[in-house]
Length: 318
Image 1 (cartoon, rainbow, N blue to C red):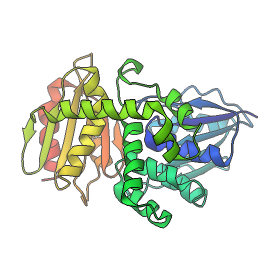
Image 2: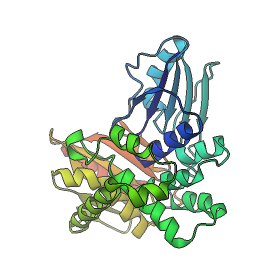
Image 3: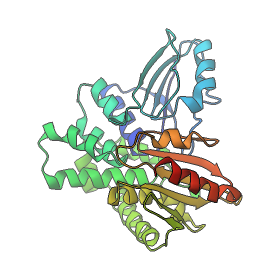
Image 4: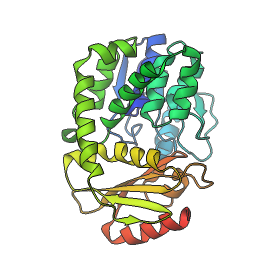
């Protein structure tokens, strides 16, 4: 029997897997990537009797590959909070999918483990820009404001590191970052002792300062949309910047467009708080688009379609 751990390389995916392996250490093959590396089950060489654990990865984008694994007799445990159509029913699939917007994958693992490693779930939730989820998890721990701020800062830095077009854009490859995290049972110890934490935080703040100095492409009562320059810092900070815009003005929609080498754009979308239309529903109108209730993304938006996209965005949340 072989084990495979397949996880999103952002804060939520890393913290979800870390909790699980603190509780149940196994010698597994690790499969992850940057934030936009979504189709992680494709080509996975698992065979009958193997166990695959999938964390914080869109089921819709991996539906065919998941079906192939199940047909081969692979046992799959799937935890996720991205929106998906019908979840398959199969004796070899244990699926915990909650796209309500009231949770994240780290919180789902926390529930699965009955809170055994909750501080790491708090880190994952803060990193995924779900402060209400993180605060609810932190409340029974009795953490004061300073300690919550430490976990929030750690989560934001882990999440920031997942964004980039290629490994050359990020400070630490997500797989290496997970391995660093895996050495720490206590996130407060990691925040205090691990040098990479300070490096990530310093670069995140510098990149965010650069993004905050840009002018919006379109700004209305309904939305703010920005196009960042074609540069490694902008690709790194696109998600962090989108989260900051949404936190500062939750009543409006926000979009951050980042140039690709091909001339097209990747797009981060944040839905207004309490909206009936989720960010995932909006982004799924576009090819290779998806996400969750408050945050979504589009992997490729052609330059010729930008104006129509912005009109569509404004109409969705007017």
